Image (cartoon, rainbow, N blue to C red; front, side, top):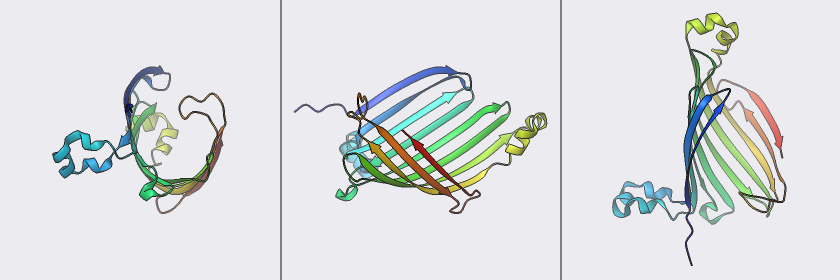
Length: 203
């Protein structure tokens, strides 16, 4: 048997009207072992201890002239030998594309559970907590009343939701046949500063 590589690294660069010039990189490991971060394990076996746990870990960062984003995610399939997979995601982003001297800084953490019902359908639930702050100069507020009003849209968003996923594609990365559909709903108002309900259907 020949072991295939489980990790990958990618880099990208582009240009958009909203963000001008941007670039970044991403790192993915499909056989990650979070227990390898234990200082004792790291001391005994070194970086080799970070592989072999069957977990999915991903990090991506995007740096642009107007926006910057970092995302770190981790998923453990078949948690405790059950059909459930668990995971979490951390994100930090700053967005200054709305106007000069105006920046929205946000930090988000989320936790999710998912279970497959059969070969095509899976159900999931999640909880997310997000904090946003707005940094703007007095000059930007004076130029635009809308920016002055939006500068008050800061605080905590706390919400939980569900997802129903149908996937009949014939390949997870390069499908040539099949159908993928997703229903998502979320209620925000479990504490925090905002209350709303969102619903989406994508296929």
